[in-house]
Image 1: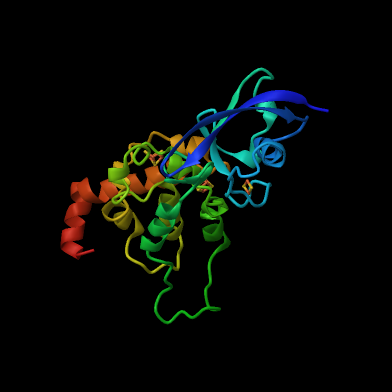
Image 2: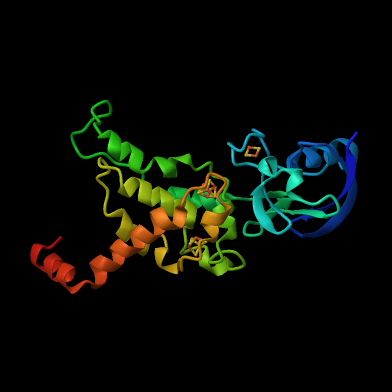
Length: 249
Ligand code: SF4
Ligand code: F3S
Ligand code: FES
């Protein structure tokens, strides 16, 4: 038999909603998603929550717990003191569908806008050859589980709907960086593209994205800053500028 804990959960839909209070049993070793499932089983059968793997790998159970974007299935109840109220709300940056479920289409739209990997002409599938060192360079970025916690926390779009059109967000900056490091990607310069089309310039390196990433991807240090530095180098370094003029690079 566990102990009773105080939970506050946001209930509502796209027309509005409010926080509801619950006293709910919590057992040793449980995570926040377990408690939400208990609420569904015992008190609120219609409480909407998105989840799938319960192992921190599908990226579905993103929510805000005591104001911090987190995965419900990876947030242990032991994180909080026994007397602390645990408040669970939907991701703030995306429109609510119902209760804890939001519409994350913004991210799929941004994914579609990013040009896909394209090998050089004449290189057929099966003929791709890469050095192991090149495979490893971008391995970190391929750990992304598309939970969109980084997209949700970034102040450029959090509470700034007007920036969404021009800003792709940290998840897609790491995708650009990953492809930029790919020795066989023959697309246009991904750094320039990130600056011109993905809104890289809106990022002022607050690093909130890196802080919330459950895969511990160093989004800012390893993807955003290197891309920014190289864009700035090319644009403002007079020697590079002259070189580009002369050699028309
Ligand atoms: Fe989630 Fe990290 Fe991927 Fe962002 S980069 S979507 S926080 S796993
Ligand atoms: Fe946003 Fe991350 Fe930059 S939180 S401002 S993309 S460092
Ligand atoms: Fe899959 Fe939480 S349920 S990451």
